[in-house]
Length: 336
Ligand SMILES: NC(=O)c1ccc[n+]([C@@H]2O[C@H](COP(=O)([O-])OP(=O)(O)OC[C@H]3O[C@@H](n4cnc5c(N)ncnc54)[C@H](OP(=O)(O)O)[C@@H]3O)[C@@H](O)[C@H]2O)c1
Image 1 (cartoon, rainbow, N blue to C red):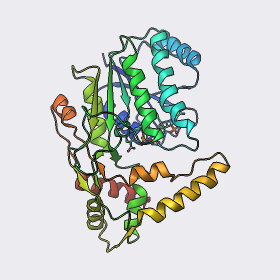
Image 2 (cartoon, protein in one colour):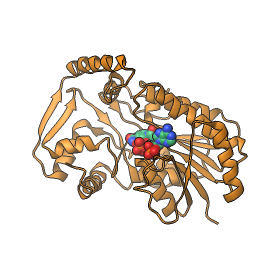
Image 3 (cartoon, rainbow, N blue to C red):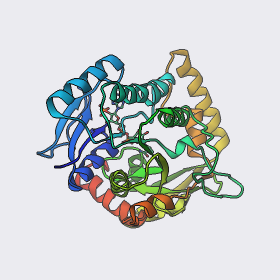
Image 4 (cartoon, helix red, strand yellow):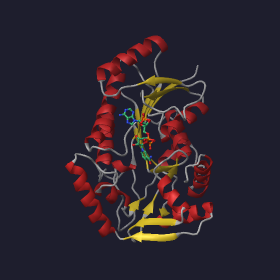
């Protein structure tokens, strides 16, 4: 019999690839979505859906009890739903921490006995690496997030670790890119228009992971003997800030003007915008925290454990991954 897996946040960028990967690895997949979620990337014939409202522990518990009575228990849960950007600061804690707590407690209270619960956290739960030594972040380092987002992810990790008799894996991906992603898209669109925009002229190093490799690793880890363990996930390389631009220029066959905006004036402008937004109780898309995060010198990490434990290596490095990504953006008319 197929093992059954619930994947939350299935409608999103990473979630939709987790669904594809789990199906291709022979799991019976239940896509956890909400009423308003798009099913554009969830068209697989065998896929079933479960609308989940994480805001109420009671509703969620009853839903799992009813599901169990009608369809049996889940063997695995990948909790991928989360917010990476938020209009209000509190949304990070509400969605990334409180909803994760509700999900964990609803599973426990409904009497489901999982083989593993996998939490998609983030490298942001560690914060960046040392900007002078450029030593990559690794699992043994102290977790010191520098954003509300990273902090909410760290608190969710800590809560999961404290749940008694609840077998877990924690996945801490670095920046994820690939088809359907809208974060790197903006940079790719600019390069396509002939501009390469950087904040600050300082040296910056980053680790990255292609979404298909991430999804493969997450699903394969479920079947590994390892349990109650955290994994930083990257493709194992450290990329210079300009490398992405160079690769994109080649793929898109564009001549570009490289613009490096000094950090201080941007900080002043963003601080002013943030203050104005705060008057209306809102959080702008680019605030000081986000700016500090994206301008950090060292976002590199070590992720040997994940590839050792699944007995495999990444299939994509930046060049191959970006080729597929750009091809997808072009086919789907996203590079306007
Ligand atoms: N992208 C990255 O570089 C990266 C790196 C490290 C970790 N992560 C983590 O990976 C996970 C997925 O991120 P992503 O980049 O794929 O983001 P995404 O495309 O925005 O997907 C987020 C998913 O979470 C769901 N979701 C958001 N708020 C929810 C709520 N209040 N209730 C129920 N579902 C909710 C969304 O549902 P709707 O479709 O209905 O909105 C969507 O399915 C997140 O936990 C994120 O923290 C991402």
